[in-house]
Image (cartoon, rainbow, N blue to C red):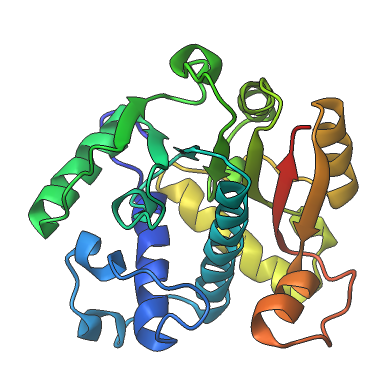
Length: 268
């Protein structure tokens, strides 16, 4: 993203979440604040609906993340950290008493979000803390002062980071035993069939044009090895096949289908 401006892709992701509430009635992921924080009426998302494939992927990744967070809270985790929070609304509809939420994002995007919250009349709970971090220029480890295990929600961010910034952030997430993380990543377009590759490259060109290019791709075996080196275990990695089977009753998608992945890992 460009300094002095809020993230445009954060707005796009929020629009996908809101559209899912309207077009699929939140069937995969329910977010009662998605429309409010954007300031949109439902009708505004019907005539120019965001693409269905990306809309459902974003809904599934949030459902996956918040399902794992609920399980972590059951195990006793009392802090959630939302990395690259954008217009994510979890902190403002948090259903878990006693769960603290720390939102971390670029200061320019955070300022924009506060304006959106105020305009929408969405209160900031006392359990929420905001920390400004530029992942490419600042150290997450220096910005966080946690004295207990935390659950990190890191969605819609990894493809926009350099590999160096990704590893630096992952090192901070892995710093404490008991920490857990959910993040999504994309496989290289070179792994896609021609039609899907063309669509992905077109989307990559669009986000690059607005100053937020995709910089980093991973293959499942690469990310598993990297997580292992950082001490993570209990890794669950769902690609197109796993997401289709779990959330869309589609067990017919081939296991080797390349695309977007969402994974959960825990540091023993």
